Image (cartoon, rainbow, N blue to C red):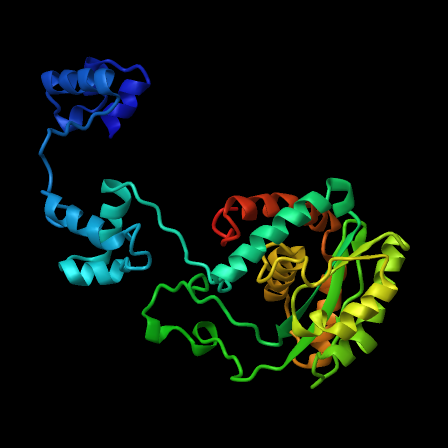
Length: 347
């Protein structure tokens, strides 16, 4: 408002009226507005109860939203979505979001898919996390070589929730090239095996097409390369880590590692169902996928995909990998505090 701007610049009521004679403002009215500005900092005057009455955000609807939108402690998973609540009450989804945020002070969090943890698995996670925390001191942790396998697709799935196209026209007026994302039903893919440690990254090893990672393939093809990476990065002073995949826990694999590794986290020592503790799972693979999503132009063949993945792998900053490795002890502590349960929502 002009009067507020002039008042904040130090103009008096008479000066304001004189400056805008063509407006024919009354002096008493301008004085009243000036006093309001001096007192409240605003020229607007809003009386209690003025404006459009709240219809959707009534006390009754607020109570209904609170009942429907929140899971009960003894019945987890019974909450309804914003759209379901809106349909049940008969108000808009936008009003439901306003009630949840403004009236109830709630925050929205995305659900995250996690592995199933049974009671037996929970107890094993708890016991083995305690043992590993005692074993892996901060210095010892820097000598661990973490390994894992991962599948990368030529056309990775797209998160449509955050993949929006903005246009001034209607949806049907947007070109198909901008709006539609093509993805083959069975997208070509490659599987990689790799390891990381505080000193650096190993090489990215590609699993042969149509190869089945059983004990023979793992011992004869992948493990010699992974152990060579360990020796290149840490000489003969390292601890080899792997998860509980069948090829990893077989007698053949465990015996081979016992003969070729100075120290090993054995199959009954690593917590089961624990991608939340392996740096490759909770950091490295996700970082690679993010870089691949941003990569342009995208590869069109498996060989091109391998080249791009190697480029992304080599460019991964070692500092972020070091930070993820150092966070393993913290994650073990959180797992212990959670009594072996899920920790993804606690970090």
